[in-house]
Amino acid sequence: MKIDYIKLQKIEWNTIFNVEFKSNKILIIRIEELIIDEVNHVNGKLIFEKPKREWAMLWNEKEKDWENHPDIDSPIGNKITAFYAKMIGENILISFGGNHSLGLSRWGFYVDEIKFEITEGLH
Image 1 (spheres, one colour):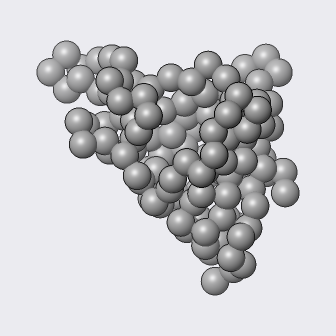
Image 2 (tube, rainbow, N blue to C red; image 1 turned 180 degrees about the vertical axis):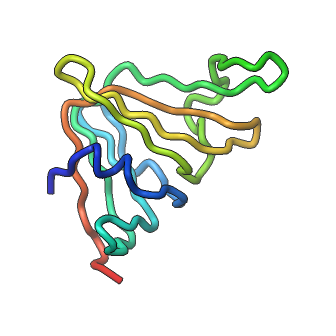
């Protein structure tokens, strides 16, 4: 089902995830648990269509500034702790926050559309 990115911004994020599939046409992220509209979705999938311009940043506590992240393959570790999105032209800017072993970090990209798929039902 297509899901509104504003709804995703309003929920509390603290979930384990993994990238299930990644190409220039689709990015699939498996989410361990996510509560949307007071319904607990277990083992769901966020599907991002046409991801592009991927980036990752790491907070430099000493300099009090963001810098390019050295680990683009796993920039936020295995847990999403924050989600941000907004329209930029005809694309949606997506940004996830997490706590990489090197410190606070962000990972993001632009997409055409976001879908949420329930794979194990509701709890």
